[in-house]
Amino acid sequence: MGKYYVYSTLTAGGEYTGWIEGAGGLPKRAHSVKIAGGANLYNKNLITPLGVVTEISEEDEAFLRGNKIFQIHEKNGFVRIDSKKRDIEAAVADMERRDASAPDVPQDYVEVPAAQAGNVTGIRRNRRAKRQ
Image 1 (cartoon, one colour):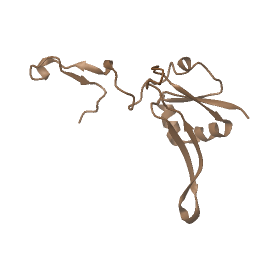
Image 2: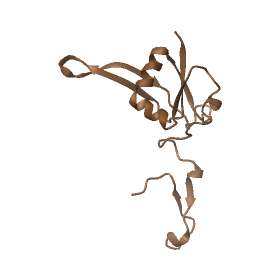
Image 3: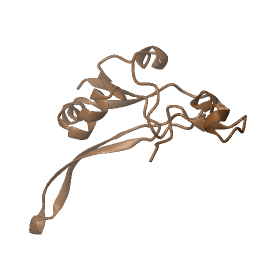
């Protein structure tokens, strides 16, 4: 049985689950795969990884390829399945760097022109924050 590797730039880990109909028509978990998170969060050694890797089986790989949520994450560049184990920085180099749950960094803040801030200087706004 071969091994596969899921490379992820998601900050939070997740579990991709497939469901079948169980007793009384209630959903029953058929298969699930947990994928590690932790990209963009510093670890106990104060290192902030660009991505993380989770080893999976052939069965898990086939399941993930058919999972709609995984497909969305893959299409958006946050996860990738590979048959080879690689250096994490090289594996995620061309993937989306940060998801919406990644912590803010100083580069996320931009100076607001004084004319837009009631003639007050030094006001900064977060360019990642959603506007209403």
